[in-house]
Length: 216
Image (cartoon, rainbow, N blue to C red; front, side, top):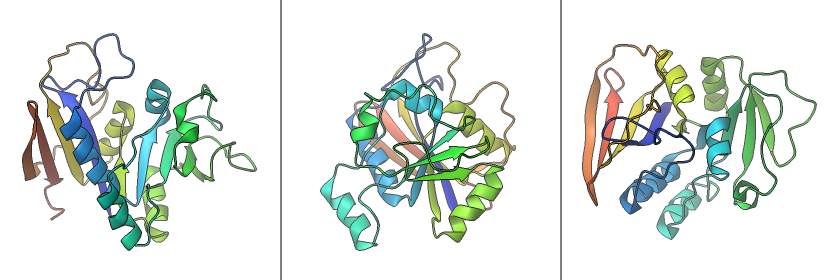
C-alpha cells in the first residue's frame, strides 16, 4: 500500500497567504501533475477544513487519464474521503460546487457514526486510527491513497510515519505568515527521503517527488 501526500507550496513552505483562506498557488503545470496523481489513486483523502475553504474538490479533466482509469476498471474520479472530527458535515454549504461534481463522497469521522451516511455521501467510515483506516482500505483493494491536505492531516500522518511519498509543487512565491504545510505541533519521524522525480512545470514551478527511505 502507498500513501502519497500531494501539495503545492510557496518557496517558504506556505500553503496560503498570511490572511489564510483558499489559496490557488499552483498554475497550469501543477494542475497537470495533480490530475496525474488523482488518476494514479484508488481513493483520495482531504480534511474537512480544506473543503470548507474551497467549496469543491480537484477533478481529473484530461480524457487520456480518465481512459487509463476506465481501462483498470475504476471510476473516472477516485472516491473522495472527507476527514472530520464531527459526525456530520458541519458548515458545509448546500450551494457549494462540491455537490454537483461527479464524485463519490465518503464521510470519514472520528466521532461516533450515525445510523446512515450524511446526505450527499455514499459511505461513512469510522476513523478510530489512521493505521486501522489504511488497513481497512487495503483490505477493500484501495492500495493507492492520495492525501490532498490540509496541514493538520499531513502532520498527523507524517507523525505516525504513514506517508510513503511526498509530491510537492514548489511555486515561485514568498508568502510569509503562519500557514506552513506542516503545523508547528507536528513532530514527524526523522526519516530521510529519496528523490524520485524532479520536473520543471513551466512558469517557475518545479515538481519534486520523494519516497521515504526504506520504502523502495
